[in-house]
Amino acid sequence: PRTAAVIPAAGRGVRLGPGAPKALRALGGLPMLVHAIRAMADSRAVSLVVVVAPPDGAAEVKTLLDAHALPERTDFLVVPGGETRQESVRAGLEALPEGYDIVLVHDAARPLVPVDTVDAVIEAVRDGAVAVVPALPLADTVKEVEPAASPGEPEPVLATPDRSRLRAVQTPQGFDRATLVRAHETVTGDVTDDASMVEQLGLTVVTVPGHEEAFKVTRPLDLVLAEAVLARRRL
Ligand code: C5P
Image (cartoon, rainbow, N blue to C red):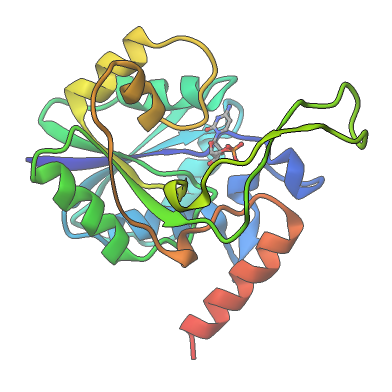
């Protein structure tokens, strides 16, 4: 089965500080989005990449893709995104041509995911999983709290989940296409990843090992780390 990757890249990236939309911020001299696209196109299994651009930035993204020679065996589509990540992913799914039965959803904000992680996700879907997430154990202990009414107020701790059973999940998340489309048609309400929508259908989501370089660039310190990872790769 053929595999397509949908890259939601329509977020503003407010937590990163003021500036361009997050996906267009520079990393090692190239927009983060270009790294994320290459990370998908590097997998020989991926033959189409659908980029979901900021609604007012689709033309800019098309220009970018033309400027940065991407592998010839990969096709590209650019579509405008929505208000939420979920709407952006849905816009990408609606643009998918027939014939792609495996779909990856990969955040533009994870520009450095290694190709082996991408391939492991695809492999697990090929082996029959309807939804696959790369996952890592947590370094920090996690607390459930009663959220404070205003930021900075002390928050009462309600519980400490057993850390050994928790995982931090990354992208690309991989799906049987029909399952992901059904999840997006059926599940309403806020979610922070696509796999949780499949969970809400009552289906089993499985993990494969994630990678520390697949971290999400969210805050200014993450950009420092991303630059350091790139510099190390260039050695
Ligand atoms: O905000 P967060 O870091 O969870 O965003 C994850 C990914 O979703 C980013 O790549 C961002 O560009 C994308 N996104 C989107 N459309 C939105 C909001 C976020 O494509 N409306």
